[in-house]
Image 1 (cartoon, rainbow, N blue to C red):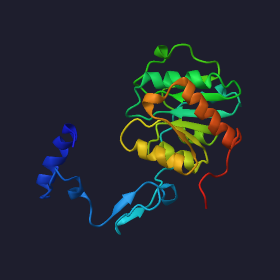
Image 2: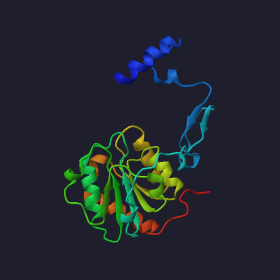
Image 3: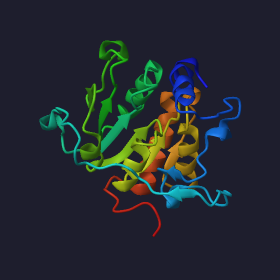
Length: 225
C-alpha cells in the first residue's frame, strides 16, 4: 500500500476495530460481495471468480454530470476521433505528440484531444489543422459522435466507448489499464500498444487498422449479444 493511502486507511481501520493484515492484500476482500464494474461480456473467459463475485457494470450515465463547455461549432462534420488519456496519469507529453502526428496524417478525419491540466498545449508543437485541443471535454457526448476512441484504457472511458459502440486504440499507462487494453484486443474491439512503444508511426498503423476494420461510419454495437 502506498504511503498516502496507508496514512488514511490504517488509522480508520484501527478506529473501526478492523483486524487487517496489511501485508496480505486479500485480507481486506469482502466475504459478502465483490462488485465488478467490468461488464461480464467484456471480461476474459475462464477466470475462476469466487461465488461472491458479481458483474454489475458499467457504472456511468450521461445524466447528472456537470456541463463542460465545448466549442461544438468547431467540429467540421468529418469522421470524429476522440482521444483522452484520463485524469490521473495523463502527463506523458510524448504520447500526445505522437497521437497528433499520427492523426494529422489522416486528413479525412477530425480529432478532439483532451489533454487535462498537466500538459501545456504550447509544448505539443505544431497542431495539425484537423485537431481540436481542449483541457476537458464532454466525453459521452463526443463518443456518441465518434468513429474511434484513443484511450488510456481506463475503467471509465473504455466502458463508455463500448456503450456507444466506439472501437478503441488503447495506450495503457498504469493501474488496471493494461488488463482493460488486453480485453479490448481479445474481444476484437480495437487494438492496444504499450505506452513506451507509442510512436507516431505505430499509432498511425493501429489507427488505420481499426478504421479500416470498422469503417468510418458509426457502429451500432461492438459486443456480441
